[in-house]
View 1 (cartoon, protein in one colour):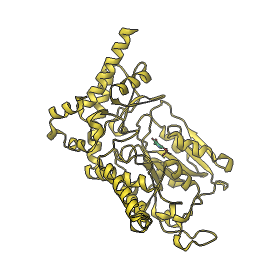
View 2 (cartoon, rainbow, N blue to C red):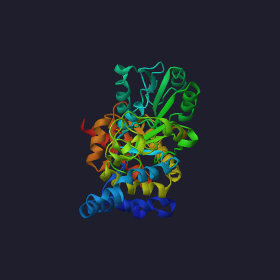
View 3 (cartoon, rainbow, N blue to C red):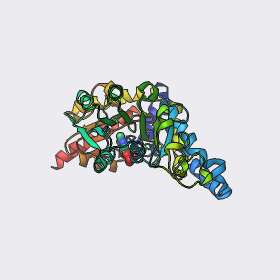
View 4 (cartoon, rainbow, N blue to C red):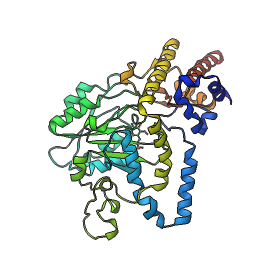
Length: 400
Ligand SMILES: Cc1ncc(COP(=O)(O)O)c(C=O)c1O
């Protein structure tokens, strides 16, 4: 399978400086990797970081905690924080976004009068399931529905945020359609009525600029396995520093204690952030594996990634239009994240055939096939992916 390698050799590298990072990602040698919205390609350096992790464990044994592991979540939290302009020590690490929601929820009391949770049906299901499950504890959950399956009706969402609203958990970029929510408007309205926003930046951080300070967002969470090429197992939770000083998560544990090694009995005495928002023993191997991806994204720069992404996603839309396939992502590049969802005839079957041809994509109901070029993809790969779709549809028509 030399398609990708050949394409690269004929590609003018100077016209796309980001392609020099391709050699850092082994899977690009063998596949057309269009799936960074689901699982970013593994950086080669992960072999070294996991080897180093095993070496430390093998040679330093329990001393590894003191020498490296205890502070690792704080250090990597700060590296992630730099990507979203978070102040030092405002980002704690967790296993997934669902846990981040639970940590936030545990800081509040849904039995009080302010118990309304306002969210959009375009949120990622895990986030919906978590908040819906808080109803038995007293939460009044209000879901705002999409009109077109692509966008979130901002005005209706803003109207639903009222004096009883406690939390507004919303995605920055919608996983199904790649629509960029108007986070600033949502945050401003929430603050006006005394509510808090939990912004899920899973589908934005690493491909769309995120600045938590400019947004004045209260909480931001996401995971590293997609656009940050960090692999499964690491999610992050930013807490606005003034809130971070006073909130007391009830989902807590000994890592959140002001002096864990006191092993004090009775109620917890909280540490300062970020440890304050952690709980039990941290997930060291995943955090070690996440580091090379975060490092590369910081080096490449999200602004450059965004610029290229707008160009390649526009190209995907042009080609889809040319073939008359339905585009389930915004056409306005300012409203569109890194993915283009295309619903062609038999789209689920087409996605399976693309996988069989080493063109890696996924398929989602009400979306179609999701194509997500990242900074390491060539324009030729973008075109080859859709040329393969046309060929598959043509051969299916002939067979039928
Ligand atoms: C926007 C968004 N939020 C959350 C998740 C995942 O949630 P969790 O980390 O709880 O598995 C995804 C995708 O996996 C996502 O696209």
